[in-house]
Length: 485
Image 1: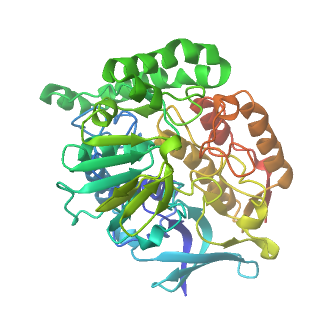
Image 2: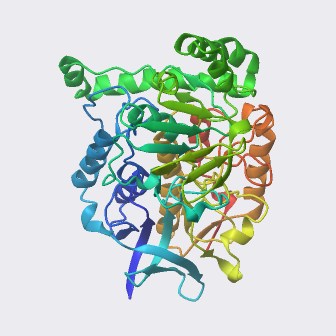
């Protein structure tokens, strides 16, 4: 029987942070399961042209692993280098099984263990189970009429086919969110014709990127300097919560005016200006940082299609628009996002008494500290419900979750106990508080539909407050909120 003290599902930053922190509390008997043939998560998977992080690199990194970044906003290849640096330094490759796609996990009450069934690697058992598969790992392609009849090439940005030569091709990109905003400027100069299908425009702010000089990179090698820079970036970003939650007036006076000026400065065509200007409060959807998107949309070989000129159907030749125009294509790129709300966990998780996570989440996803659920002993979710942060580094929140997860596991181990499980009352009180606070935020009241919301209308992706507040909640482990056996 393949049995371990802890099993971690996923080898991205969440899985890496979990593994390293388990070692810090003396848990060496752990195993990482990775469904792909390589490690690294998001930044190893998403290699589409123009891929880059939208949070400053010194903050978008593990707090205990500084790095000599080459620019303020790292591009995909450098993020992969950083990921490999962490994996190699901490010996995590030796603790990982690749091609281990998890099909199902179930709590075995008699054994007091989780059974993890995988495709290709058999079954595993673990006392503690940490899901770190990530909320942006299951791509979604809408069921457009005739989608499967197209005879050209198609792929999602999450699985870019680099063997396909886009030079001079007739290309359509469906979607206009964060990934599309990076792809469009990267491929527009290369393709023959680019048709961009935008359902809803996003607010876009200038991207304050810069390349670090050799001297600046040498300074990043100093832990003191690195920490000081992280701190300065952190508090600068944290101030945005005031607008997102406490003062939409400030959002309109500062962020919205900056975004409108960005449109006027970079686009001269009034029709194009109108087409890219949202009609909802800035911040309601994810704000895009780009200084190259608008100039790309203004290129003569690029055509922007709005909701009034959208997709009626896909046919064997390309796309037929709602205005009756046939657009013949060689390639369709789907930049249509991920199942990031109701599909936080992509495989069945069966807890006590045969109840699944999916059953628990039939109304909307919910969890204590976004991390654990009643009825699921020794089970923890990294980047679970209401742990998203729209203004700062997701890695900061992941490390905050590790504070809680490690305290919970250590509490069981120190008691020589069997399980820990959050009480229904504690989870309900926490979730009630989250959605009470959410009513004040732009994500709930900003007048948009976004992936931050579940089908129920609850905003279940975002944490409604400052990230340091979440970290304080995670660090303040409350034994009374849990059941121990």
